[in-house]
Amino acid sequence: LPRQPAAPPLLALDIGGTLIKLVYTASCGGGAAGGAELRFAKFERRKLQECIEFLRAQGLLRCNGSTTGSSKENVTLKATGGGAYKFADDFREKLGVCLDKLDEMDSVVSGANFLLQNIPGAAFTHMNGKRSSIDISPNNLFPYLLVNIGSGVSILKVTGNRKFERVTGTHIGGGTMFGLAKLLTGCKSYDEFLQLSQKGDNFVLDLIVKDICGELVCQKQGLSTSTLASSFGKVITSKKKLTDYRPEDLASTLLSAFTYNIAQISFLVASLLGLRRVFFGGSYIRGHKSTMENISYAIDFWSQSQMQAVFLQHEGYLGALGALMSYGD
Ligand code: ADP
Image (tube, rainbow, N blue to C red; front, side, top):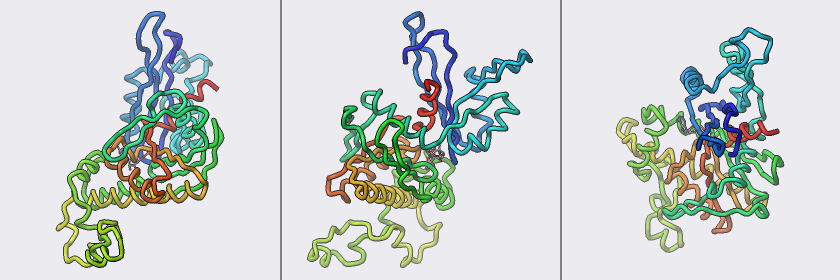
């Protein structure tokens, strides 16, 4: 971002149901040739105080009015997400910061379009263990489906810059999975949950086609033996109690159940709209390899390789990025 070296930093917030995301600029390079780089930070929403301390420490809440007692306006920050409305009074009263509230979907789309049009290598596929950057020329970017997996899931058809429609969504999203994960596995953080899932085996709890039909029948009927028939379905016929299951296996089962489900809904919506490219954003993905692998596998499987799942760098910050971009409006 080429900018005046003396320009104050820019900051935008996305206060979501689970996480507060920040994107801000910091000068780099120095001297007349200096520019600004983008920095990213996130906090749990319940730790708003930590977030405010971070903003203070970084000099991002510099207030140009309150210390002088003059009639000058206080600092105004671009903010999106539901919490921008809920916490607006807190920011104004406690910090003298005014939140300029932006529509969440507008911001998510602007953030995705900014990444896709300005940052080479921001888009990539993750399939069969391989991450590959994809080059998207501005001529063939639109239309695309954007699936933003946060606490809930929003599914948008994007047809241009600022042109989009929120087609649908589902309330069974990242918040649901992480909520169940906390109850079932006792995990304390999302990263701990992801780590547990890496060490687990979902087939301890999942019912696969072979379990129902037997291997021979499957082979005769040409069914794939390892196809998931029912997530958590094995629990029904087992005498085990919750404490008899390993948290690792529970985590792995949860992650695959939710990930495949969201990917399948995304495939169905993309098919209905005749779209072949599906971009995934939201903190649910968290740069986690097997989450991306499972989404890619499901999209490829259901579409018979006609559709492609594409991921974005900084996928959790689309809304905050879009809000930051709106300073230029
Ligand atoms: P929202 O804007 O609704 O807060 P996000 O895009 O920030 O949505 O995604 C929130 C989801 O991301 C959570 O429900 C969880 O599945 C996942 N997640 C990723 N990192 C974390 C974290 N550090 N703490 C809690 N959830 C996280």
